[in-house]
Length: 212
Image (cartoon, rainbow, N blue to C red; front, side, top):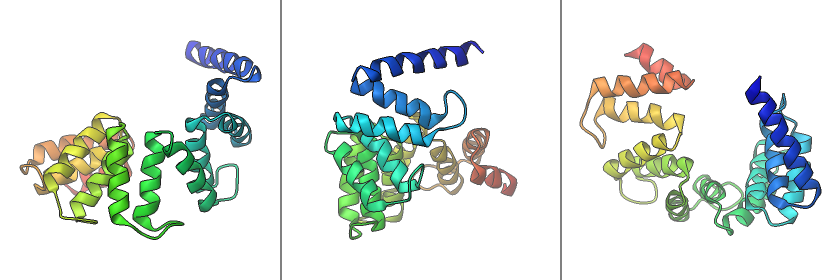
């Protein structure tokens, strides 16, 4: 109850600051609606405040708008518009948006598929601290997409991604320890990573534990 009250109070302060034109407050207020801090997510209000913050140059708001257009949250899915917002945010150094632009290039979404460009963008996002980019680059290095395989670097990136809070990376670490790819084969370590991933709600990790 105390935490919920604090979050509601924070939202109220963000609203007051947003109404006075502070871009950061607009973005934070939009994020509160996006995450449903006061209940269920309200994507309509999230869009409203993210758009206002975007007009004032918020890279965070642009990145969120890209995600909403990519996934059809409160709007019809529009990958072209999503990429436009991601590019605006990435050009301001936003790590997650840079990762998303890399994802579009890797998968040929809106733009022609370009593994080299994707790797370059993922590397840039990794340097800026994106856990998702760490996992995405690890996947490319693991499969050798856009260059030679590098299982050791892939394993290092998965460890980094997990340390940055990416639960999916926990399952991937279980897999590489189970199969000895980029690391010494270690079934005990594999089980440990799978358990951590399963505890975090990763369905594939639950399956892998049942399989073992």
